[in-house]
Length: 538
Image (cartoon, rainbow, N blue to C red; front, side, top):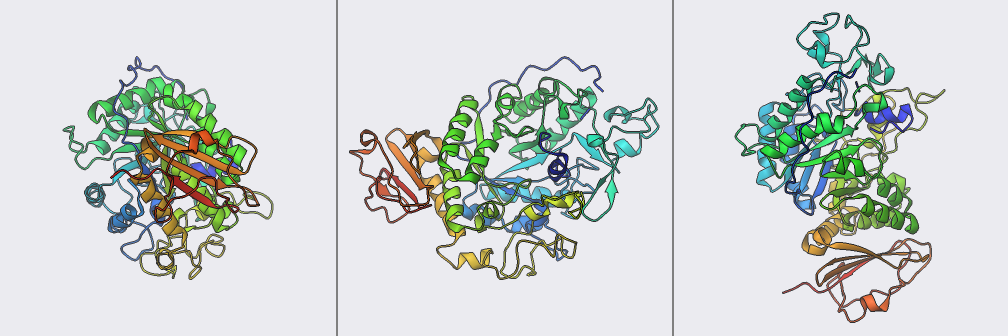
């Protein structure tokens, strides 16, 4: 969630994701000691859970459905699954929970959940959970059992507007928030300044990371995404110094128990994330400004964003490079359905330095644009449904109604009549597996290359062709190993302006073809991608 965006757009994230009187806080725990960084070359596969795969015919994505498709995720080339929340909530996206140590019954049981984690690990896949517990929804017992009862057991776990605790501090000052079904619910702010609350969530995350409590991490997740992370939550002046007083003690406990655990923050300002990586003690943030440049496919914007991102990232920390997530428009829609632009954007995003993230269905070119006329006269009503176009069902089969399709939004207005993905439109796994030139096979090729070339997941990064020409030139290096990415972002044929001293004397080979010799300075057609590199060692 990004509070800098207009309120209507904020709801698309926070009725999706997302504050708090300051009370005395226990002395801050020292910042986490240096710990092993998460493994290099992570490729996240982010899943909007409800929309991925249905196993029981109710059209809602579930744990058994996901477990059955782990082989697909691994075959694609992902290494790490990032799930949106699984906790019970009155909202379809499962942010704003009514219970925390629980699984939404529509998704399955705790046994189903742990079976999924074990199966993912058996496939060599890591699992990250999305955590958002700065708010609770109407129905949460902390709220329900504390109304007008200031001395109730959990009354101090929420923020209240009155001394009698009859009115909870509402999310963004609004008493009720509508769901896409038309039903409205209250959302209250959690008192993150209460040490008991901090300890509760510390123990909650320890449970998900180490369910058996023995430090083994058996059946535990490998990392967490911290949603809408801020130091002064929502800039309200109610919950302040959260990096030091709330998050650092929790992260310290997690790292002490599981040193290799990864912490990925969604920096709430959607900026470069330096404060989150330093003062917030997280391992990774999202490369939001770089994503904006990749939408433009403008060389200078991309070069500037790469440089600024590198400068903002301290040693040992990482950026997650992405084109899509559950809060923004689909990339294929951003590039107006142009397959060449979609392929160019994918090549840049997957081969730049940092961890890569693929949002489910991105590899197929699924489309979706969130409405821009929300709450306006003649426009879409303000509900959490504004995010549905970015969260439509994964396209397993050509027929959108085929078994397994998680079309939970079917029949709802306007989200079903105006859906972006339709049967037999060519944008499904079934259809694209059969076409060697499909976007799906392009993603598989790029990811196989990323994993096969050490310089693409461990190496340095240099910008070549640093001029006003249209060709983007990125050199990845690891010792003598080199991969050169060349993308013509212009509208006419163009030739890379490479420094002969950097490329001469190297036996470059074509990494997208049969490995035959290739010239790095050959002419490129508009939006053409060329990837050349040093020969693989025997």
